[in-house]
Length: 134
Image (cartoon, rainbow, N blue to C red; front, side):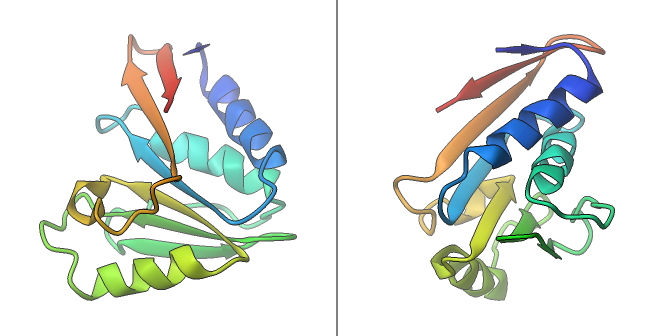
């Protein structure tokens, strides 16, 4: 699927949220600047989260309360060894009222459930991204 603007990425995230029926784990794969956080902003809007969403690049994780689910957003970019954050992530994954989004999840791949969703975002050009759902 091709996404041709920031608004389309936000809309994709909102629509993705509308299809969530239970707690979900989503791994986002893509280079810096591919649009991962923009997707999460749309997802948050679709989950009824009113507060502004920020990238967790420096804090590693952020939590937002939605209408039905809590959104927990992790960014493991700066962590080679997740240490205690792996325990925090495991708790998040087990919470039935939580939607968990992970960026740069290579270091915690063994913790992710086998049925987690993977969305790869490929940078095509300044305005275009290719999304591949796995």
